[in-house]
Length: 254
Image 1: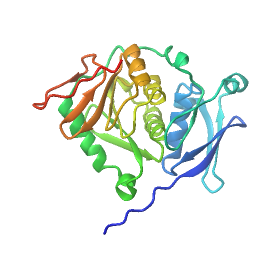
Image 2: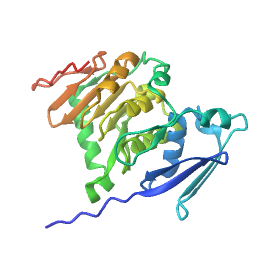
Image 3: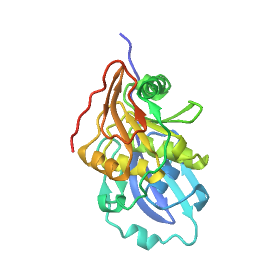
Image 4: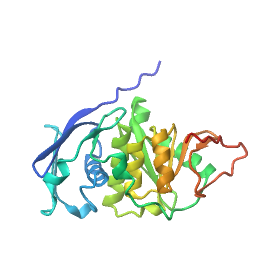
């Protein structure tokens, strides 16, 4: 009988300009990418250069970040916190009303559904922490050349923050990227993707009703249950073309 290792998670305290934001449950890989992705997703930075200092101390479980001098700490952290759903529970300062102010997607590449399924398979084969433990989430971006980059974490939204941080630090254009995730696409997951500007999101599992409503409002293509030759397109803006012999399931939950 083959035995897998156990997935690991650690409490990590994030401090921004001497203000303790929260304690997060994280996997100790690619923490700098997570910081950039989380700060961007929460509207604390607009670009990687807004971070003036970053110290990750894994031994003490502390991450200290210094942002530009014009960052309004009092205004930012006076906002109401919203705790996210799912494993590796996190915190967001954005409400559904805030997210609806994000820019609607007006550009984006067109993909064949078979391509999404192919890349989803490559993604699963290139997720070492999941293969080792069977208990990790992952997020993956696919560039115009078809190259994939994967980030993993105990929390699905943490993994998405990590991949957004990677893209931000490398100044990648979101309109040229496909985002794939292993986790359920909830409204906070959709909001992170929308904030960065992804036009197409694919998941191996479901999307929530609130996420689909938001995706429709922001013109984002969401495809769920990418498995084998199966898929569920939740929205339809012409960016994913169904080229499969096996007809994709179509549902209209909202």
